[in-house]
Length: 79
Picture 1 (spheres, rainbow, N blue to C red):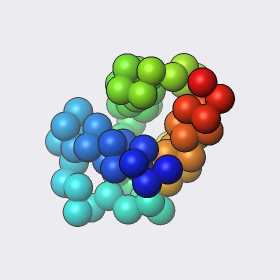
Picture 2 (cartoon, helix red, strand yellow):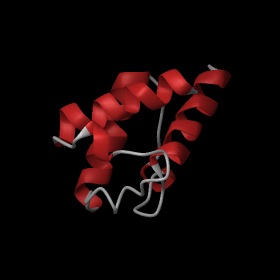
Picture 3 (cartoon, rainbow, N blue to C red):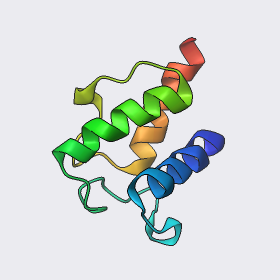
């Protein structure tokens, strides 16, 4: 999962201009100031990056970056 987490942080920094130093596994997506539109964009970007389906309902404003990485890792394990 560590690799998925690192790639997710890179995705957040490149797509949304976030500072990698401000992103922690416990950071919530709303705490990173991602609004509902940004969450949809993140879902689409993560689907393209990891080549797994991610439903918009799986990533909410209260989801943490660590939880998002776990969701993606779980999907990668079943592929």
